[in-house]
Image (cartoon, rainbow, N blue to C red; front, side, top):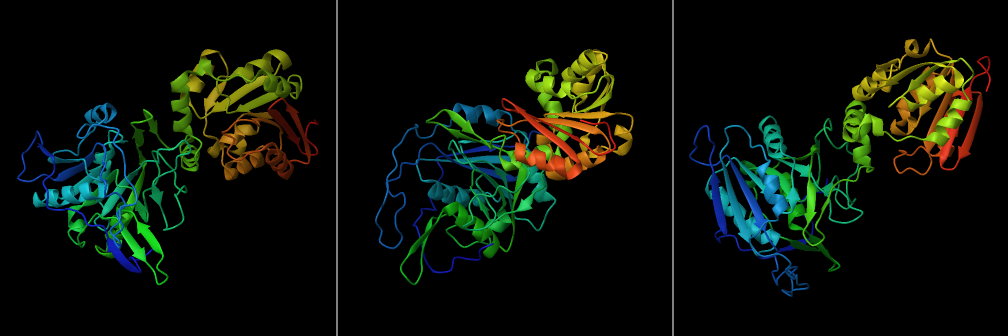
Amino acid sequence: MAEALQGQVFTNKVESDAEPALIVERRSAIKLADAPKIAVCMPCGDKDDPNYFTCGKCGEAHQQVSSRRTKGLVPLHWATNHMQIVSPLNCSLSYYFEFGRLAAEAREVLTHRALQDNPQYIFYWDDDVLIPPLALYNMHQFLETHPDIGAVCGVYTTREENCEPVIYKEHGQGAYWGFAAGAGGEPEEIFSTGAGCLLVKASVIKKMETPYWADAQEYNGYDQRVTWGHDVRFCVKIKTEANSKLYMMPDTLCAHWDAAKQQAFMLPPESPPMKRWRMMNWRQYWSETWQGFGVKNAPRYPEAYYKIVQEIPQGARVLDLGCGSGVLMQQAHMQRGAVVHGYDSSGEAVTYCKALFLNTDELDLRNLKDEHVEACDVVTLAFVLEHLDDAVRDRVLETCKGKKVIASIDAKADYNNGLTPKKLKKLFQKHFSNVQCVRHKQYVVCTGVNDGEPGI
């Protein structure tokens, strides 16, 4: 992580002694307190300040911002989101709102006024960031149980079609993608973040020099300017001035609302953090998927299933891994007279298959063992391998190497997790001496068997 600002630094002048436009106390219903434990600070509405990006060296304003929202009004989406928020138990909250200022100056005003009420925490929350119901509850609990950590943030993205997380692990290296988003993701230390969903201990802020929030321009010996955004500068001050740490909570996934486009931006489902979450929470992901659109509405791939079934010997004992709704098992039984057994990580899928009198059991493929496959002749993996990471794919095929294995992928799907037709064939060649890969439209069916086993 970068240390303090290195060159000659000019911070933009910000007003700090003004009163916020609105202060609202929200006391605990269980026990009143003399001071709020958490101060919620929120800049609201457009910030059409003509001094936006005023150079600290020359005093010249380089850009102006036009208004598109009425000052002082929060989006309806934020208002309804706020209604769902679960506050930490028995904690008093006060809300501080400021209108019509740029974010840096608004946060500076809000911070100074909030500190006068002596809270233990300040929660910086933007009026265009929609947070999960348990966000504040979980973030507060995290800081309460980690005395060496001074601040924690949720994850939200830029408001672009190709959005990226406003999370930075190292200075100058761009957005950080190397975390597993969602439930089960481990909190980790970061360099900086935006201030749209940021909880900070007041004791940490009090150790900082003022201004707390200010854009700054740093000039090196060649008179080249580097602009430090006020949020990045604040995060640096947490480490360098308060000698503390900033962490991110990857399970606190927020949406970034764009009032002009009337659209919420979040981490894309196929982004690396979301893929890592699916790998870590395979069973939960598929249970929620089946619950979402119903097992009976699961995708069907008739062309691919036809190719797979043609590779199954008549009367073979077939084990279908990741059997889903059981369509492939039904076709193997009806067309090839196969004795079928299926495994799936989703309890919903297994229940559905059992209702169709299909022999199925619940199993996470990461726990596949030799005894699970010993009674079969053929193993099928229809549109399953692309949902596994490389290590699990290897382990599954190694466990099944004594059987005839038939797998399929959709080469045009955007969720293949890097498993291209070429990589699939190479993976099979690693585990089997005889490999055939056939492509029909966008579907690729790969069959593998080792010498001494039933032939292809």
